[in-house]
Image (tube, rainbow, N blue to C red):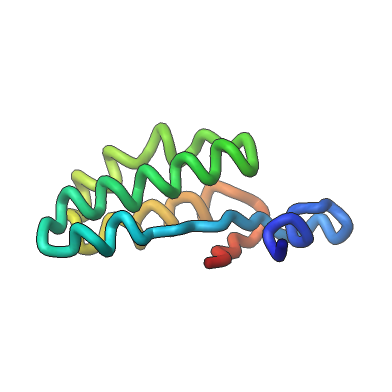
Length: 91
């Protein structure tokens, strides 16, 4: 899987997680619920794949400060700014 290759440490220059956001797509008529599902997916993927808890600690603040339409972009921007490695989303 591409995620495993990028995270293998051979280059040491990437941070990659796989995100399946189909749950959020299924709830697109309820934006807040859908975004909560998407952010939960980002949180689980980063924690399980990378052992990274940044998203877990920041997802509520990102959602509240930006609203459901921009919460994903906000959490990814905050995470990218806080992490020294480039972020790659495969999916």
